[in-house]
Image (spheres, rainbow, N blue to C red):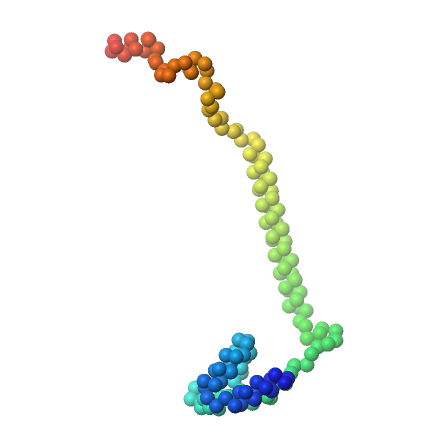
Length: 151
């Protein structure tokens, strides 16, 4: 509460728009936005009264009482919202579980199918027969040459 009183005192001394803006920039963004929302500078309003207006509003604020006991917590809590959130989380978990299960099944099927696919045969130098190694150029049979010449 002492921090609020000191802040109210600083705003009370701010007698120009620039000084109020400097004080707002020194506040955390959340507090600056709360101050601007609760005590805005209205159009046509004298900017010299904005600082004291903010100071008066901060000084009149009362702290919210704490909920220390179970009964106070239960009274302040809406269990319907909590139940809805838990149900939503459970539905999302079930959806994620189904998706992961489908993914695992798909990966397993892919692995099984890869075992049954024929593997391509790569030609290698060792597969060439010895008679093919001796000839650098393969020539057509003699009968083929005769047919071409006679035509």
